[in-house]
Length: 122
Length: 113
Image (cartoon, rainbow over all chains, first blue to last red; front, side):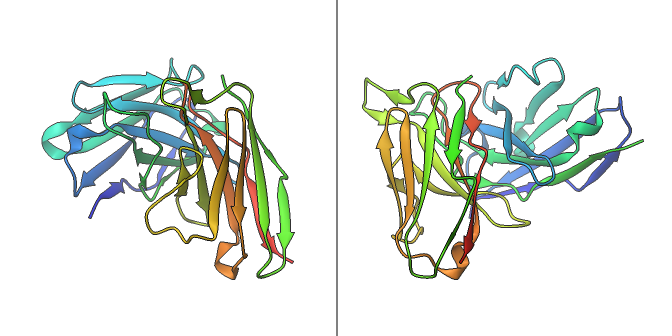
């Protein structure tokens, strides 16, 4: 079955960077977008952006454009999200989620990873 | 950005009764060329990732009980739980995937009265 397995929890200091991985299985990795969404403690959902794993193209929310880098490693079916210049308000659970196929109709996120807790604290 | 506003922020419903959540977008999310509204509903329980319930405003995801239904088009949408069950206690989010950045409503917490 389709699975997205994320890396473990991270604790970082302000100003540092964090990289979260999302290892996929059960489908053809390059055939679907991967989206990144975060959720601060007790708060709602916030979209960071997506990556097209086949082409490596990305789209990011303007709020994160300067600080987020999304990449993919197609031989190991894994997507990565790096967030730089961390602040305390970046403390959140970060989710990866599978979107739709590129060049097809827009799609919601049918499958989600379990989430990765990132804590930013001095 | 398209702002998604849900109402109410929370509601308490008796078991077996109807729960209704509204979602309004600041711009249309209707794609006129195919008459599809790119609006989804998710359910999130504590400690779990969101789960897709409804997409294209009214299409139920495979495996989702038929007591969940979605309606609306353009800018105004509704999620209805026809007969609330104990396992439906959760926070519900609407999301537009029409335009970038993709945006979510603030969430509606559903509890048992």
